[in-house]
Length: 369
Ligand SMILES: *[C@@H]1O[C@H](CO)[C@@H](O)[C@H](O)[C@H]1NC(C)=O
Ligand SMILES: *[C@@H]1O[C@H](CO)[C@@H](O)[C@H](O)[C@H]1NC(C)=O
Ligand SMILES: *[C@@H]1O[C@H](CO)[C@@H](O)[C@H](O)[C@H]1NC(C)=O
Ligand SMILES: *[C@@H]1O[C@H](CO)[C@@H](O)[C@H](O)[C@H]1NC(C)=O
Ligand SMILES: *[C@@H]1O[C@H](CO)[C@@H](O)[C@H](O)[C@H]1NC(C)=O
Ligand SMILES: *[C@@H]1O[C@H](CO)[C@@H](O)[C@H](O)[C@H]1NC(C)=O
Image 1 (cartoon, rainbow, N blue to C red):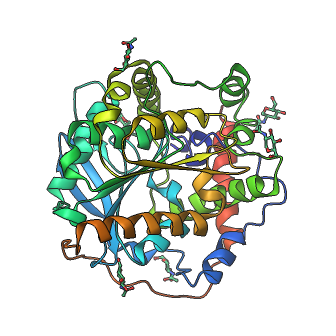
Image 2: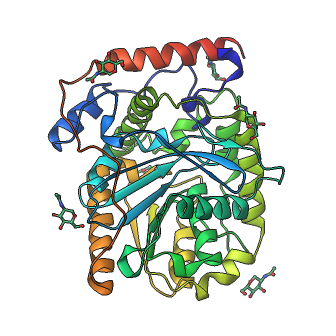
Image 3: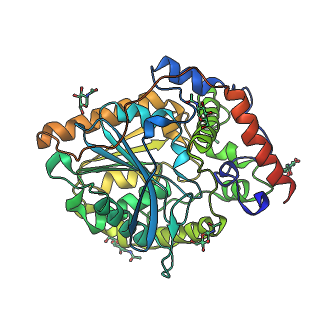
């Protein structure tokens, strides 16, 4: 049974059975949580209960939690993974002054896709919009949700903005691209590293291993995603869906539609790029910033495709500053009441053991290849 399910970390492009990046301390995520005064609960009870909603023939799984008097931030994750990839740090930091909504993409993790239609970025965008409506995540002014998408999730956010700009109050686009004629694709060596072998080299092109900051980001990502996977019981991406997502992202990159629409997407937008991103090179972020009428770009030095995770606290504070400018521009926020319990504190869990449990399953999978 295990052999038929691809572990999160493998599909995130991380090395099966290769262990943590060099020098990665499995306790580092717990140390960061403690330093930031965030909940260390290994069961992540701060997310509140798992919620379900049917929208556009998708049985979605989602969480909503955080500060009910803040704006709603919708986290849209990337290719081949589940919402566990956000780890325990970023969602908790954002939840301090926002209402955080996170979900599994159609057919991924705990979200079951019953649609007979092919998976496209546009269909993911429509289904996500329908999910937010089904969950009552709508509002006026600064009460409208802000879409924060990473990589393929940024493409979904862009498509949501292209199709229904009046439903959102802003965008945060991280390590992503609009496709079209100016799209800068990864070079052949990067594609080779991402697809060759067994994932050994993939982590090194997702993160910049040649800088201490890049290594630290890779460590936080691997340990954090593993932590959330265990906590949410949600850490098996679906290989069939991942293959369909790859096709969908490729078709989006080839299409001119969203690229051509960018000048008409007038939403305030924060564009974020890893200066060393080899997977979606930072030139693509420059294109977004140039063509979107109300966008600001910042590049994170020494960061690869996982730019936001490299210094999660700094990324979160920049997102918060951006959210504050939206609230100032649009007046008070009115968002729906939340089901979530307040964050709790608990004794630090045994992160080493958590990681070992994940690694054991990952190695068991690798052995069946
Ligand atoms: C986490 O969940 C497990 C299993 O339900 C339970 O045994 C454990 O006490 C929980 N840990 C915390 C810190 O709540
Ligand atoms: C909730 O967030 C708002 C800003 O979005 C902030 O002013 C307020 O202090 C936060 N409340 C709590 C309890 O942290
Ligand atoms: C994986 O996704 C496909 C497409 O949505 C679905 O048909 C299949 O049942 C899923 N597999 C699992 C194990 O959930
Ligand atoms: C993965 O591939 C690398 C290089 O091709 C090889 O050295 C390593 O042993 C392989 N690991 C596994 C778990 O198959
Ligand atoms: C793509 O869109 C741009 C902007 O509308 C346009 O200038 C360009 O000719 C289009 N390219 C193709 C291949 O359709
Ligand atoms: C990683 O960062 C170093 C130092 O900034 C830089 O010289 C190198 O080109 C980067 N490597 C990659 C693969 O981007």
